[in-house]
Length: 255
Ligand code: IPD
Ligand code: CA
Ligand code: CA
Image (tube, rainbow, N blue to C red; front, top):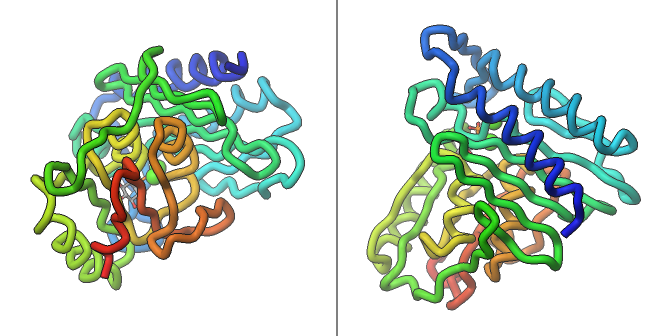
């Protein structure tokens, strides 16, 4: 494994630890574009800290962060794509289910993915071609088919026009699956697929910082990640996602 991973892990862990010590009454919420899309002062603060530390590691890298930091993806070289708190609504409601997500792209393709959930001390990492790990142990997707599996859903919450289609798609899966869950953090949903706790996850619209790290973790754990139309994921615009353990054709449930 590239020693960069250890250094990124350390930075992410230090920044994430503060999340669990934040007093709820200090959280100030602002609205962003879209339905119920919020940001707190802590999203911005943590992103600034991550940016400063990550760019000390790789000063030549470009940086993209959810909170108004939209650099370009370098075709040649490194680009960080960062979500400082994935699961901001959970964070603002004291639901104890959020994570920091950091992806490092090399020549515009995912190279390293790091996700840390400080509430339960879970560190997921992956490097292209080197496997995926949870707290240092190698992880794999499950081998269950949908009829004995769990579906994870995001409902593209910030886009009101997608609610109905999200629910119809969930119904198609949930009629077959043994059960379904919605954790409220895309990277946590993806990491749960990667370590075999669930079989398939879909969402109609996500931003690159929601999935860039998690998709590499799923792929390196043996799973498959594409857009819901089967096309390759992109990192320069929002897209849908279908992530799975790849043991059956999950596209048939999208009709
Ligand atoms: C959101 C979460 C949520 C997903 C949304 C994302 P945020 O990210 O990952 O689970 O359904 O689509 O935007 O706003 O909490 O960073
Ligand atoms: Ca997010
Ligand atoms: Ca976020």
